[in-house]
Every structure is written in structure tokens, then in C-alpha cells.
Length: 165
Image 1 (cartoon, rainbow, N blue to C red):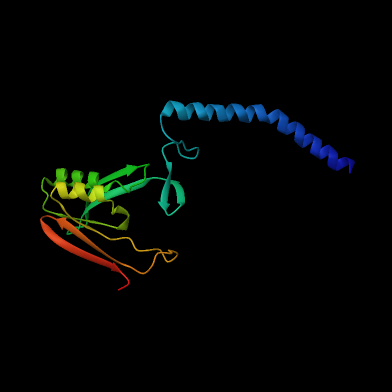
Image 2: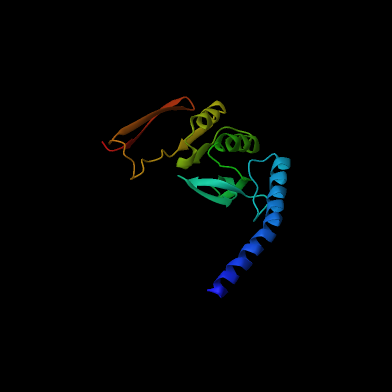
């Protein structure tokens, strides 16, 4: 018993000694955060950030957007960010239009880019845009449904339907 109480006593003393050092380190991190003007800092990689990758799952990472010429499979543009990319479509379409010097192309995006404001940006730029409509998660409590989305893309009306009929 005495040996156990000696170990606990030593651990408590070490904790008391180390606490001011840890507190100073956390204050330094707080100062760095305030000076950076960023909402977060990463200790493993100074430029990476905690990003929502799906649902409530986050990772400390980067996001890469790329624009590829589908006919020749040649990259024409890329952008590396440390932010969520749900609002990246409009900017990448603008960049592609500037690089290609035309709006005569089709932008194809996965279901993560279904934000209305981003679709509007692409439409305003005169670029035909195809975006996958996200599905209803299998864990959803929503009733069976049919979603029909009407989009005006390059002056044409499109109807996209998804769901259980």
C-alpha cells in the first residue's frame, strides 16, 4: 500500500510541476490562433485544416479541385485549399472559362457540389453544368419520395428525377 501511495504522490507532484508548462504552451497556441486570424490551427501540418469530409466526419487535410480536359485527359487547372469545397464549383468554372477563353464546355460535378448558388454562378457564366443529385441516406427517416429538379442550363430546360417511384 505504501508503494502505491508513493507512486500516486509522485504522479501528483509531476502533474503540479508540469501544469504551468502546459498552460503556457496552450496560451502560446491561443496567441498564434488570434494572430493568424484563422478559425483553427493544425499542430501536425501548419497549412492543413480540419475539414468536414462527409456527414459529421472530419479529417485534418487539404482539398484539391481540378479541371480536366475530358477529350484528352489533360489537367488544365488545379487549386489546393484547406477549406470545405461545397462552394468551390463557381470559382473553378470561372477559372476554366478564363483559361479556355470560352463558355462552350460542359462542367461535370459529383453530388457534393449541388449548392444552388454555385449552380447559379455557372449558369450566369453561360457554362452547361451537370451535377449529380445527392441520394437520401439509408438511415434517413424521410418518407419515400420523388425529387424532380428543373434546371435551366444554357437556355435549355432539364428534368432530373431521383427517388422511389
